[in-house]
Length: 170
Image (cartoon, rainbow, N blue to C red; front, side, top):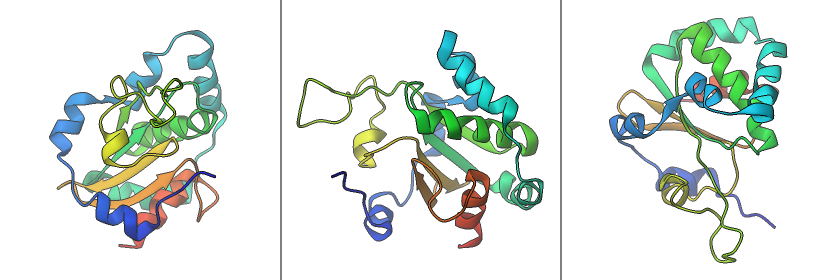
């Protein structure tokens, strides 16, 4: 059984990050998808083209967009990532939300004691105790953690609503 950290445990783990450092090692969601090849890219773009963002939520999120940065850990082979990343791309493009993507995630199948191969996976995989992807962190402009979404929304029906939930909860 996979162990997920409680919200309190996770908050103690990630209090603040250096966003400039993260920006230097990540891409935008558009760059991440454009860097994919073949069927992987096609799956992401298909979801992107079909997804209808909740416009009411989008309007509310737009007010927060200048003050937050979303960091996502993703892999093209992950089904939940195929559903989440295109939504983040919509938010990036439609309201100017800054979304930074760590995308070269690899598992460590030959090492039973290690879940992720670091490198090429980013060191945040271990620092943040990532157990599942997509792993979505929401930070304010100073790098203070505001919320985390693991795999898919757990409190609201859509990703954009879940992000707004974390922002309004602060």
